[in-house]
Length: 288
Image (cartoon, rainbow, N blue to C red; front, side, top):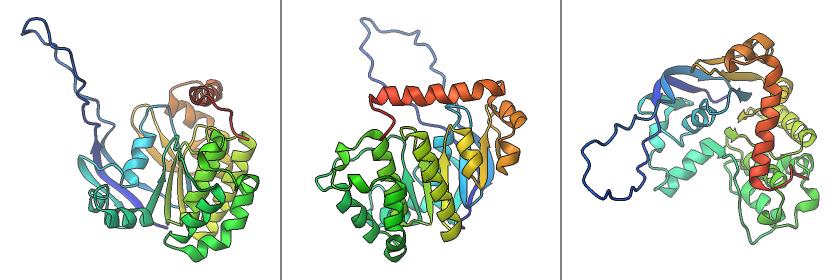
């Protein structure tokens, strides 16, 4: 287990200056533009290890929390530590290849809606990822089983950009596991994957997490999947509260209604609608 700790963390996305057309005449009555709202203010929480699911309303900061926890974003105030290491050690990872490799070997990240174009087929890409991670021997022991459970056996001869969206997501999940970082962050990793296939894949991931000591953090909108496979839950509330605890407790009806500020019966309608909107925006099927 690699503990991730937030201590008095505050974070606000910087303002984006959009180019504006020059006014016909100088103006002295420019309206005040409000500063962006902070995503987190003085947040202190320790993320548990194992297979942990992040659940909460859309736009509440699940992705931001994971980016901070994965040393892809850095707090304005406070500290985030991964296994005792301050994430600020990796602030220059985007400019220093060796530091980026060091960060990835500590914590890897599956971004929402990732895509790749490759000349090589998937069957050459997956072994390459496994061989270049921090633990090639461990990757080799799970390779065949992972390819099977991810439903990729019949697609190994296909290049990445020729896969459907659902297949692409399954392939990227396979890469993240084969790389063998001790911590893996997954932001909405299966929204385009057929539900039965997604359930099977996360069941396998939860078992491997427990057996191999890999910490997997995944943000999802499927509460039932979280109930079935999570060892821990990070429940993010509309009012900014962040709770960490047992799935049975935090995914209970009253707890979810408090977090979402919505009747329980509408939560599933919301998550299904959000999933469908994501799929339609991509113009792709749910995955094969």
